[in-house]
Length: 56
Image 1: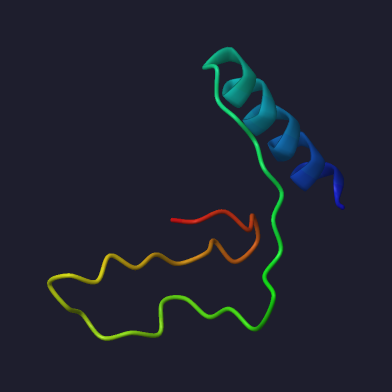
Image 2: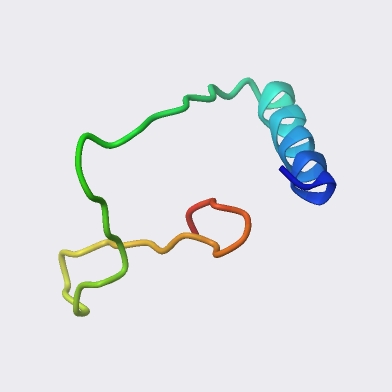
């Protein structure tokens, strides 16, 4: 991991800790694609930030 991403991860974890949040690391059992669907009233999709790897 680059120093910039390590710094971001530490700041994010500090924010999470001070707000009483919970952090979980997860993996998928199979392929995962998001942001590929069409707009729909009941679809609440999200996309991943390309370099930070967080949902936006």
